[in-house]
Amino acid sequence: MITNENKSYVRSLNFLVVPKITGGLTPSNKFDVSIGSFSNIKLSDEKFNVPERVDMLLGVEVFYELLRPGQISIPNSNLLLQNTVFGFIVSGGILRENENVIHCGFLKHEINLDQTLKQFWEIENVESDIPKSRESILCEEHFQNNHSRDKSGRYIVKMPLKENPDCLGKSRHIALKKLNSLWNRFVKDPELLTLYSNFMHEYLELGHMYEIKEIEEKSGSYYIPHLGVFRPDSKTSPLRVVFNASTLTTAGNSLNSIQYNGGVIQDDLFAIMVRFRKHAFAFTADIKKMYMILVHPSQRQLQRILWKDSYNGPIKTYELATVTYGTASAPFLAMRTLKQLAIDERKRYPEAAAVLESDLYMDDVLSGSDDLETAKNLQRELIDILSSRTMSLHKWCGNTAELAVNGESYPFSNPEETKTLSVVWKSKTDCFCFKVASEEFGVTKRLVLSTIARVFDPLGSLGPVVTKAKIFLQKLWLLNLKWDDPLPAKEADEWLQFSSALQNVNDIEVDRCILLPKPDLIEIHGFADASEAAYGAAVYCKSRSRSGEVSIKLIASKSRVSTIKRLTIPKLELCSAVLLAKLVTRVTSALKLDITKTFLWSDSMIVLCWLQK
Image 1 (cartoon, one colour):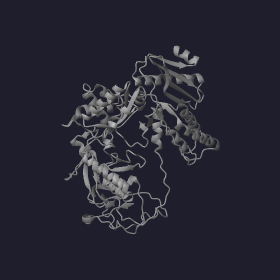
Image 2: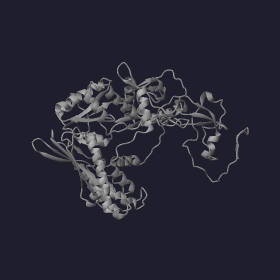
Image 3: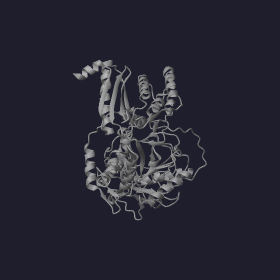
Image 4: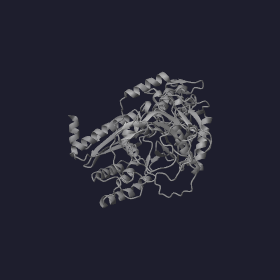
C-alpha cells in the first residue's frame, strides 16, 4: 500500500520484490542545482539533488493518478516543478560544467530503412489518380477563404487547424531543454555554431522571424524546438535547420497534431520526370526560399522559437513570420500559394503560369521547350511572375549555356552534374546517370534491403537490375531470417556477386530527350511480358523528323515479382498486360503531346484472346 503524509491518497498495489531495481543512475554524488525563490514550496523529496537508491518502481497505470494540477518552470534552467499527491517533484536536465571525460565509440550512420523502403515501393507504384479526401476539400476551401496579399504583393496565409489551439499544453520548457542541448553540441563543434548563428541572423534580417520583447504566456501558443543537420559534403547547403512542430506539449498534443496537412496537390515525381524528357531545350531551377510566404499575425504565436547568442546569454523569444518547414501544412500552403500565383497572373504570364501548375515539384522547376527562343522567353516569364510576389529563382541549369540565366555560377560539387528530383542529370551531355553505392559490413537482410531500396530509379531505366533485386529479396523473405542474421552461404554468394555487378550501374547513361526536333510523327509503343518469377511492362516513344530520321527511346518501365503462390504463365501474362495499360495511360497523360498512334504489344495469344472477349 502506498499513501501520502496526510492520508488523502491511498492505493493498494501488488509488488514484485527484487534484490536491486537499477544500478547507479548518475555520475555524481550531488548536483549543484537550485530551485531559487521557489524553495518554500513543499517538495516530495527535499534532497532531490542527492542521488539515492531506488526503493520502488511504479508503473504508468499509477503514475498519472499521482499528478495534480500545478506546474512551475524555473527561470534560466531546464528544471520543471510538477505537483503530485506527495508534493512537487523536480524534473529536467542539469547544466554541468564540462567534465574531463573521454568517450570512445564506433559511429556508423544508419539510414531510416522504413522511410527508404517506403519511397522505393512508392516509386514502383503505377497508380496515379488519388481521389480527393474530405481533408483536402476542407483545406482548399480554407485557403480560398483565408489567403490575401500585403502591399508588396507577398501572400499571407493561415494554417488549416482542425482543433482550437487553446487545447495545446505548455511547450516552452521543452524548447528550452532542446536549445540548451543544442548549445552543448555547439561547444564541441564551433563550425556548426557559426553556420547556425549565420542562419538565425539571416532569418532575422530577411524578416522571417522577429523578437518578442514582452512575452504573454497564454493558452494557444506553441514553442517549436529546432536543431541543425550538418552536411559537410554539401557544397550548397552544409546546414539545414529543422523545426520540429511534432514535439508534444504537456497536454500530449502538438502543433502538427491539431492541423491538417492538406494532401498532395502537384503532379507526382514520375509525371514531372516523364514530361521533362519531351523538351529539346530543357532547364531546371530552384525557387529561392519558397517558404517566405507570410503567416497571418493571428497565428504567429503558434510558431515561437527560443534562441540565445552565447552559451550563457539571455534566452530570447522569437515568432516565425513565414510558413515554416516542419509544420504539417507547410508543403500544402507553399504549393497552393504558387498555384494561386498562377491563377492570379495567368493573363500576364500564360506560359509561366502553366509551368507553375504542372512542371513544379515543391521548389524544383523542370521545364523547357521545342526551340531555344521559346525556352528563354519562358525563363523570363518565370522570373517576372515570381518577382511580382517578391520570389526569385536560382541554381539555374540547362542543356545549353544560353539557358544559364544571367551567367549564374553555382558551386555544385560537379559543375557538369546536378540532381534533378534526386536523379543525376549531366546537362553537358544531356543524360541521366545513376549513383549507387553498396555497403560492405557483412551480409544481412537489413543490408540487402537498404542497398536495394537506395536504387533510385523513378522511370524504370534500370528495370532489369531492379527486377533481379526484387526476385532476390522475395527469396530472402521466404527464409524467415531476422534483420541482422547473416545470410546462408548460397544466398550470401549470390548477393555478393549482384552487389559487385551493381557498381556497373554507375557507368550507365540514359538520354534525357526522347524526341527528335520538331517531329511530324509520334508513336507510343508498349510491351508486356512475363515469366515464372516476374512480369513487367516497358513503354517506348518513336518519333520521326521531317527529313525521315527515326528515333526510338525508352520512356519508362515497371515490373512486379510473381506472387509466392505461383500463378500460371497466361495469368501472369494477363497481369503484365494490365500493368502495361496502366503505365501507358500514365505516360501519355504526363507527356501532354499530340500522339499519332499508340500500340500495346503482347506475345501471348491467350491474353489477346481473353482481351477480345
